[in-house]
Length: 174
Image (cartoon, rainbow, N blue to C red; front, side):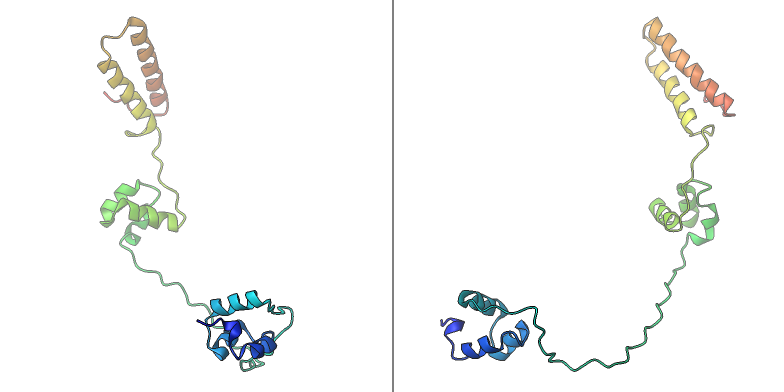
């Protein structure tokens, strides 16, 4: 296979290398761009990138095209829309059950609209203080044979949790 620089048209390519783009040269001399670049490197042909070539395309029209107004975003109706007023006031699970969708779907819908998640008050059944008190009761029942000191420690912690729960207006789990 002959090298590109050995072809008859090579001197012509060297003469016009700075006047045409690489793609135009490849089309004009019917060669692949990587092969042409490799041959130019081997022979030391450098293209002057600062010199502007004459445009080979049609000149652009002087008047720019008017810009179109952006299309309005299409808002799809959602099964959650009907129960959207509840989002953030009740757990996502409740809204999901009412709308017949997944909890993840409600979470996505809520966050897309900037609605904060629902936080149960600490006194509610299922709230943090209620869970703490329940956990301590289960631990005391489970560790029935612990030392007196350990039993007292668990009872004190349970009493403190119960006081916090009652002070916040909650109900003790029994």
